[in-house]
Image (cartoon, rainbow, N blue to C red):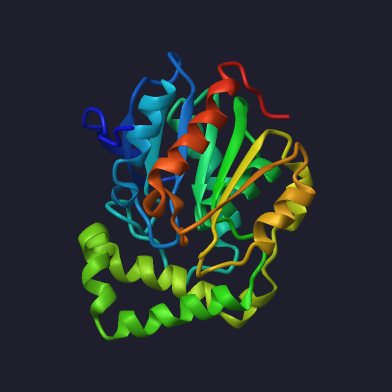
Length: 272
């Protein structure tokens, strides 16, 4: 199977709630096909998805909207410190406004790490018309010591400069805000009781969950909690030889799972 991406994406900015957000669009426009909406990880952005959205769009025939949240990539800056409720703000307030601004109809959310948690909050708390399913890669639904330790460890790499150089390639002037907004919120003492399991029974659309066996940020307890409580059920997949980023660590297997999940949903999916 080829993992070569198709044509270059259309790029630009969407103004959402007074903030300019960087985006890239692959494949068909809304109204001609459903849309895959990609929600990035805590240190991610449009560029860090690399070719994966284009590949999934090509495999499914759907469009793909990829965007950088405020304070990431080339999007407008975000105020610091971020509150421990920043994922709730994104899922309940920003994402509905972005979907409306982009003219999105039938769609599936594809979230990774923080983006997967945002997808859960949105789908369980403020689902928009046309939501047909959610794909969750390396999701978090509660805090675990393994995750807090891993995030805290990145602080040392950031302070010694080794992580700064890698992040600045993707985030430019937003580099410090991107790192501090994520790291400082997750390591805040108030984050210890963060939990979004209340949204799981309200997930009324099909759910695909993917986690790596070697995920350094969370244990299998995360996806097991989703499997037990998701309102419309959830298909769980634990990938071997895979860490926290299935689309980078096991791109072929991840692409196959996501494409197989998306195809039967077709057009006309609606949120409940």
